[in-house]
Length: 319
Image (tube, rainbow, N blue to C red; front, side, top):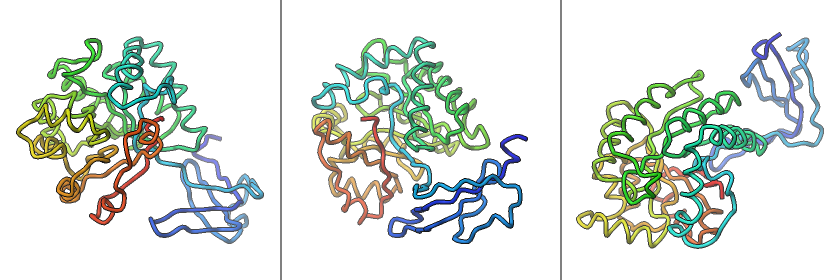
């Protein structure tokens, strides 16, 4: 009998968040699994309706839905919690040297497997993931995610300027590699795996690269992720790199990458106009409080974003 034919019933304390202001509580609750899908969640013992089902009494254990991590860097798994300092220094000192190691397929496979094992061990079943710039390493990440049965949005990081030589791509090569990955992996594994275009952040991407990403996203309905206003020095640097732009958020908007399928991480140092712009474009935000504290980046203006109607989710940033 394969897993698709299995019926299982779990009894325990079930806590099920169904909306930002509502949590359903079952004590005890019964969770019915048919194959790979949740068939029912009920207060009534359903064993008589499912004869032959495997029954497991979890006693006082709490049953929760799988966690969703909307901002996580797979290549930083091996240096998790390593180093201190401000964002830009930390990237150059720790992150970029580690990401260059993903040029080695064996290393990429080792870390990808460990990453997904750790994800599942911590109860995370869905994640939005940055890979390194390497096409083969991104293929390896997709393959590892598929083997573990997770739901994931995975993207090859795109960087065509202001990056270490080992990680700086040719713009056209970056686009072509990303398109190949999109065509191979988007909506694969029964829809559990999606490709997400991943320009790292405005300082490491040319306007032409970001514009091309915007064009592809509009033409295909593809997802896009990037970073926005995480650190004061980063914000000032972006203003220097794009002197004619009204704001950091406007750089992305002028490139055409802001939209309802765009996820921006951090969004700490935003003006009121930038918040309004994100709301107008229906951009989603990944809030990473632990990472922001670890790198002394600041605090995201949560209430202002929520009052503007912006959807906010949580990311670990693998801090």
